[in-house]
Image (tube, rainbow, N blue to C red):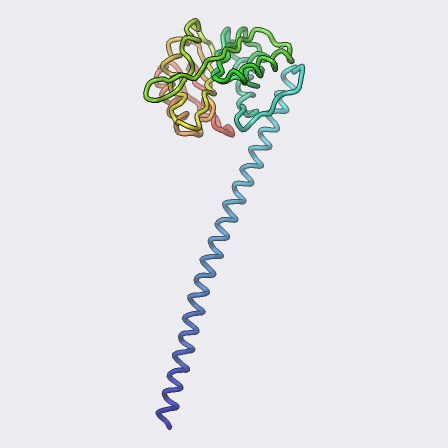
Length: 251
């Protein structure tokens, strides 16, 4: 009988130990899950704060543009595919400061309007889409803007499997005081905008400024760095814009 009691006691103790171990394992698992949830909530919270901060700054930049420039009609949407207000404000400030005779822009849109309204003597904007080029022309008419030439430049095969603007469209361009690189679309190939360096480096005036958008992306950041290296009398500044922007200007 004592042996039976002893065996039962051992089984009970084993059961208690197993239950304790199971509870410990369950606790550890729940703790890991809780920590994971906390990390995810913290990450999401930071992203929300970052988004709110960007939105606030974009609203500020947009309000400044409206106040600084005498727009004659409503503006199309900004951000997303279009230039963000922070970039538009940088374009305005650069043109106001440097007074360029010729501005060349890769990718047309609201930035074309801002460049023209900021005091540039002449603006030439390239667009790889006939549809968007025409939309930009219509927008410029609505705002009664002159001195702007929107050129359709078809995206054609380029070296190394790239597609880029038809180079025949830019043959006459020279002594460019401000080059704005915001096209062609760079989401499919990180090097899609890289030909701008080869095609425009020798077309820039000695006092030229180059503005590049989307330098938060690896391809555009490399283009900005290589562009600056090709212009030894210039310096590169990276701006903390929504999409990242770079300004390469004379020292």
